[in-house]
Length: 413
Image (tube, rainbow, N blue to C red; front, side):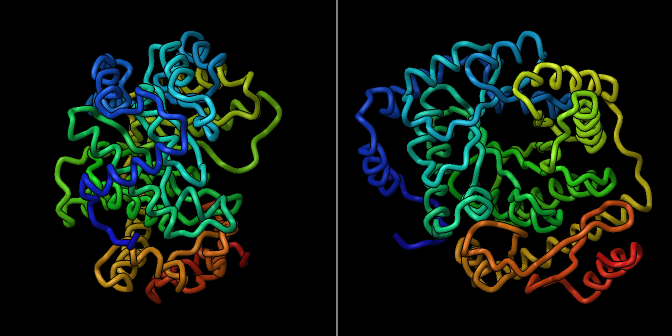
């Protein structure tokens, strides 16, 4: 199948779908009409798109917590979470009956989080089970985690998942797609992660997805994190409009620090509170919690919830530092995106493949052999993430000089 950024005709999707479903003992509920009958009955308070839209309209930041079937009701009732998620790498092994049992055990919207090498059957099962949000993407779920999975194959797999969401949308069922930043143990510059998120958003929109969450991973510097999230939303909306995608509802997601997490409960609570505060002050639609132990998840949700309640209606004041950081991130992101389109000769999907081959897109410490691995990063004097070795990332000389200057202020890296 040739790679291109073009919406799949329904005939092509249904042909590939038959092949995908043949991986599993056929279930009548995987029939699109049967799945629609189940999804149409889901009340608004259990719909991810409905709840996200209401939160954005009201200017509130929601708490999303993660757990298994035993923990999810506790996170709902005791942890006071607004949204729930579960990591479901082996969802295929459980099937629709079990996944519906999980969904029906709670009264909140449920999201599937995963980085499986082939997400197509998993996506079919979770959506048919009432899970109205699916997290992942062709870049973000392959480059950081999989050594040998070809990028082109993953992009095609996620085109299928996005087309599936688009099919439900065409039938009046809203499905949220969350686009995560590429996450590794190294520091990823906000502009690089934002560029990847915007690319995957545009790829999803082409397949008919109408409800998309942009998931930014916290780096640690409050000003930079707020600037990155604001720049991400602004540039995504702009790119969607310029590309002719109308009616796409965008929300933002702030993912807690992905670095080492304190084992000490008091210290861990501090990290959780700080992340919640950053999400609120940056105006995120929701914050995704991280905890060192599953047993701490309930108290983590409560900690985040009280912080968000206390900061309701407050945003980080506009300052010269915030404006400068926003301008820098947007300029760096534009350099990357413009070059992706350039080397793809106008086709975004082809541009992504060429971008990794040439080093235009480069994710530090990623496992994939398709990642160049030449770009390196470090923290400046205030803890903001900067490029220390640009590799082949196409930043302007002015932007390179800015990064060098900020790192030199702390005596190098």
